[in-house]
Amino acid sequence: MKSNLSAWKYVKNNKKSVATMISALALSFAVIYIVHVLLMTSVEGFKPMLLEYPKKIGFFDLSEKTLAKSAVKGAEDATPQEKMQVIYDALLAKDGVSDITWAQVLQANYQAVVGNWSEEFPLYTTKEEIERYLEHTGAKLVGGRLPEEPGDVIISSMVLKNAKLSIGDWFLSDRYGETFRIVGEVESDCMISAGMPNHHYNCGTYYIVQYDEKNSDLRAFFEEMGVELGAADTVSGLPEHRQRFLDECENLIGDIVGAISAVVMSFVALTMLIAYVSFLRNRVNEYCLYASIGYRRWEVYGMMLREMLIIFGIGFFTGLVIALPAAFLVKAAILEPAGIVSVVWYPGMIARLGAIVLLILGVLQIPVLVSIWRIRTIDRLED
Image 1 (cartoon, rainbow, N blue to C red):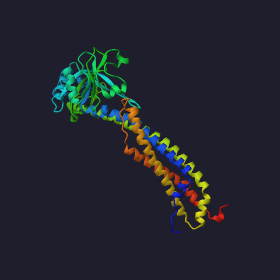
Image 2 (cartoon, rainbow, N blue to C red):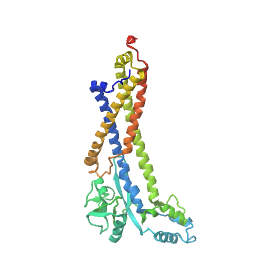
Image 3 (tube, rainbow, N blue to C red):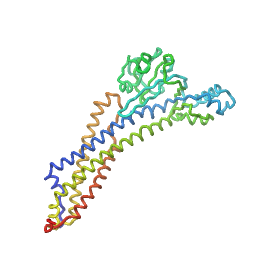
Image 4 (cartoon, one colour):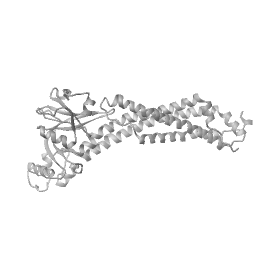
């Protein structure tokens, strides 16, 4: 028989059962995508602190023990203090390094949907130093004023939203009490903050280096100078931040997203397998009738496969139609007001969902092929 069996007949004549399967698929895909968007806030929100800020600002503190044992170029037999001065002068002389300041620091905390990150920001002693810092990082004062008195701080807009703070509030009041007052709000691509020290309330003291990206590998510079870094030394440049981002954000979140997707889609695959086995059994007589009037097994199989492609195709695209507007709504109504950085469009995740659809379709071929193998002609329906 030359004519093809129509895959639309079952779909059109069994709207209720088909709609149930399509709805289950669509909602599963939509939930996975929205969960992905939420989890990825930990990646998107940490990018400014871990990938952008270290391109412009670095921190380091070398212990006296390290300086004493290191054969620093040009100061091999000098005292640790003299070696530090040689290192300071050599680093400041590099083209692209504009300033090095010994300063106290505080930490700006960013809370994502999953996890949080704290990044140091400097406490300069003069307003002029803060102005140079803002100019170097490309930050703009968008509210309030610059620090002028001990304990004044200016905080990134995103950090303020995230911590539900505003100008006039006390910063880190749970830790330091009424010590650091927020006097200004700044915007930048790297979520920078700054301030002035208030006695010895701080999160440490470091050399703050203002550099360009080509000088952002401080560890390489120290090795070139002959410094033998140890466990007591702090070196925080772009390579260190990139590694932290890879280990603590991309890999970790990727594993979580993969685990959630695997659990949900395993459940969906099992549910669809049970549903298909059920409706295949209910259609045994139909398939036997096709065989009796001259259709070959592969033609019946082709019809069944096209039915599956229609159901899964509609389910997949319906899921995207639900997921994308829902993700935009979650971003606008929940994430942005909470100061949480998010991205809605993830083509890679859509591609992975498509791969999951193909995987489920592949699994479902087992009961379909079993049903095809068991097709009998009409005279053997009772067997």
